[in-house]
Image 1 (cartoon, rainbow, N blue to C red):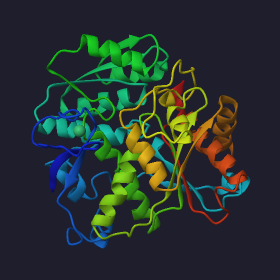
Image 2: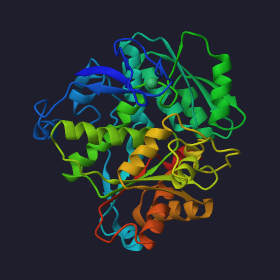
Image 3: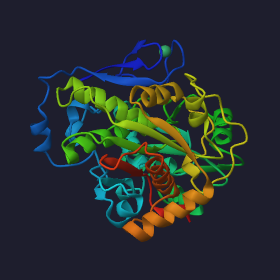
Length: 380
Ligand SMILES: [Zn+2]
């Protein structure tokens, strides 16, 4: 482990990584881990010789335990070839990164694996978070693994399966009317000083778990894809992958090439898409976010908005909002034409790929990676 410090993503103010840290003490921005790494740190071939999994590269993982960090088997999810779905979309080199195959059935396993391991190493006894669903289940699971009490505030629209999951895994669950923002406000009112917040980008380590998705694309493909379509709520994964590419360049594994990043949201809650189109540096909160089957995308405002928008622009990427009917159609398409029982968020990315291929933004020879972030069974 070569964790150096935690630097604010906005003002770069440095924070001690050996103490529990939330947001930047100077400006309230999200903190990002920095490592002492360089081209001599570890060759890619060495990392490729290790057992696949979340901590395949402990040189850029934040835990003291590194390769012996307790695990539920998260990470190393497959890149599924697009098959008949690829034919239908006219994107021959389509791949689906199936994050549903993580231990809690969603990509949230990754961030919580890192954050909860770090919480245990820092001696935290109780953590709390508002969640639109899948993050809550993952927090409960990794809290159980590490013996940390987890308090979860869920919007009351959260599927019963996730409520059950959180409770079965031993978390304290409170349901709140409204969106994840409302759940966050209720939690803030109830929270005591000894409850450490694991809310999205309000602590520095969930993004460190999520970034591994970016590393795995290089491990599996040998180079980065041309286009990444990512369903974006809080955006930790998009921010994390963008960070991973910079780290991999510092390690000497890649050059300055980057995939074009596509932020996918729902038409009823699209703060990033609006801000991208209006060429803003931050995203004003979306008023009256509409209910959606893709509950992970019902996030009216994101603390890392400026990091998401920065990555989209630096990558020559774009942002696209998908309506509920198109999302439903393509959630069905990925199931019936590929065999993945995908979350609606995955379906939204298929719909986005379809539209961007039709407009010519995605070319026929592009290597395109869609992220399916969760399993459909969690949405029942
Ligand atoms: Zn700051």
